[in-house]
Length: 205
Image (tube, rainbow, N blue to C red):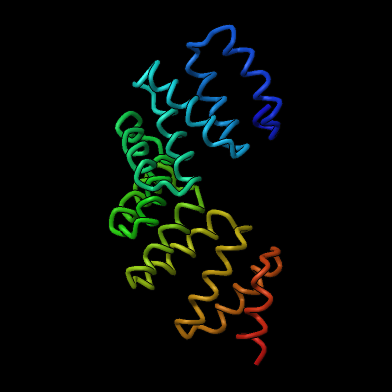
């Protein structure tokens, strides 16, 4: 049900499963995710807390509790949960990615770069990993490194409109108007809303 986006239907199903077996960690974790998707953060927190209380050696409740904290901009508790999840599942790319996002929010850019790079090492086929590492490199003035990462993001996903847009803007700032405008046009073709205005400003003369 959750795969189809029916989180309310999933909640009904999971409530019954947990009623029958209150110590079902997987069901508690899944119900927490459904509550998180429905923005019912307090209920999600209770589910993840209970799942962890029943089994503190599985990474998913920590990972999802971290996502729940991050959704409420509670960066430090989210960081603690993602760090615990990393200890339990050190080969899971998404945990490093999500922790990298938290480090970025905390302006801890070297740590964010390290986590995004680890995520890419574990899964080099995710455009978001490259994009976020590129954004982080911009914050430390590594413009060429950022351009390389944005380029990678659109190679991995040729329909990643935001990647074309950001790459195009950075190329324009680097005095590469031809490539910059080409990438802005591609972003516009893919439906990125801000591309049209950028084309009007930078690519009409």
